[in-house]
Image (cartoon, rainbow, N blue to C red; front, side, top):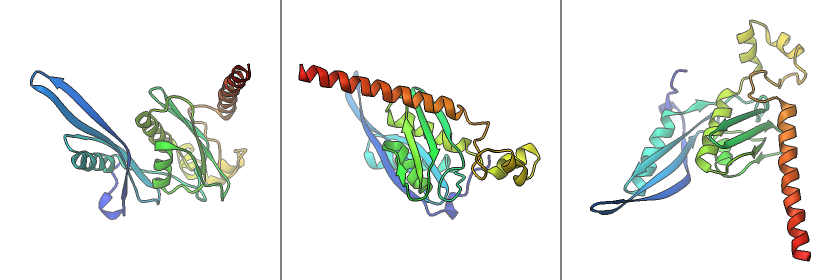
Length: 210
C-alpha cells in the first residue's frame, strides 16, 4: 500500500503512554523515556508510533514521526465501521463492532484514542486479552487496516456492489468473510468472559458477607 501524503492532512497528535526506563551500566544508571503516540485527522486517517529518547520532548517527537510514517486510511460507513472484526497482537485482542448513530465511542485507553483520532463517531469496542496499551494499540491498528467496505469486496470478487449486498445478510454493512473470527464465536467469547467476571464478583460478595 502506498504511503499517504501527511503534508496534505491536518494531523493532531496525542500521547497515549509515557514510560520511564532506567538502565544500570558499569558507569552508573542511565534514564530514558519511551512514548506511545497517536496521530490522526479525525477524517479517516490515523497512525501510531513509539519514540525513545533521553528526554520526553525528543521521545514525543520521534514517536510522532514514527506514527506519521505508519498512517493508514480507515474505511467508514455513516460514521461507523463497515463490519465487525476481531484482531490480535501478542496477548491483546480487540473487538470492534459497528454501532447505531448516537452511540458514541464506547471504548477505553489506547483503543479509544485511536478510534477518536480516526474520526469514527459510533462504535463498540472491547479488549478481550491483555490491557497492555502498546499491544492494544497495535491490535486496534491491525483491525482497522483489515476493514473493507462493500466496494472493496465487490472489486476483489469481480462483482457489482448490488450483487454483494444481495448476498449479504446485513445489506449495506456486510459481515466480511475475511474477518479473523466469525460473529457467533465472538459473542460466545464475550459471554464467557462476562460469566467469569460475574462469578468472581459473586464469590467476593459471599466472602465479605461471611
